[in-house]
Length: 314
Image 1 (tube, helix red, strand yellow):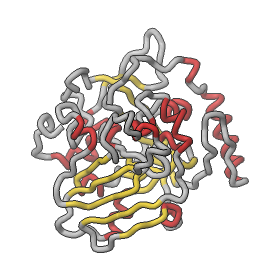
Image 2 (tube, one colour; image 1 turned 180 degrees about the horizontal axis):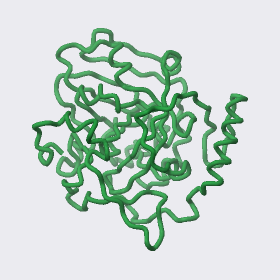
Image 3 (cartoon, helix red, strand yellow; image 1 turned 60 degrees about the vertical axis):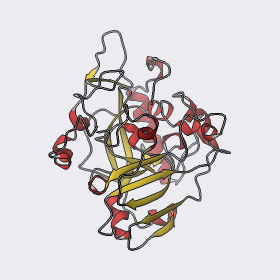
């Protein structure tokens, strides 16, 4: 995924601490009334009840404005502003998800029915894009392992494949005149990666239901991998024996490998991965941050790749 314009976020776009705190207070009051106000440029969201997770980072959050207006979601276009401008066209309710493949109990469910039995958590995670920028996002979701256990993976299941919805009438980037990628968007994880406690399915952020431009109503979040692994608007999850071919790997395997773990020692062919630009931090003397192995989650996940050549298996 390439940055088409090397622009930075202007200081005027950054939400001040005072505005942020007042907004949070207002949303808390709105939650008591079971309503959330519709703000300009946003589809009205609903408040979500979630428990704080000890797996969260304590870093400063990226502003909601930046998170919801600076996105890669090629189903709506290749510019960072396209998802926020165009994703309102996506219908997200009702939303069905199919789980099939090598499972003992294949199923298809309405997302709202699934969530009735799920305890949601707020997971504040670092988000690192392969393009060299990063955020800190307060996701609301639940471990992917919860639903995988329910469908009872069979012994031959080694990988998990994911598919995004295909609706060219609602997603202009999927129309034949705009073939940025082959559709549907497909991603995959090894089964042990999918079952890891850090891997979640997100249904919200900043305490509210997920905005369309961020992957509503259901997206994958794997915080130690580059952001494009976090497939959005999921409609199918399949457990399979062989490694699935993923969208960006098929498009350009030299630049986008299957694993795509954040690794400052393995540069992208066209830019360094040793540093990153944190969205919301700008100014003449603002320095790029050093990128951390596995995006700072090495202690929790490095053992998954013991014995592997992480330059080859990038």
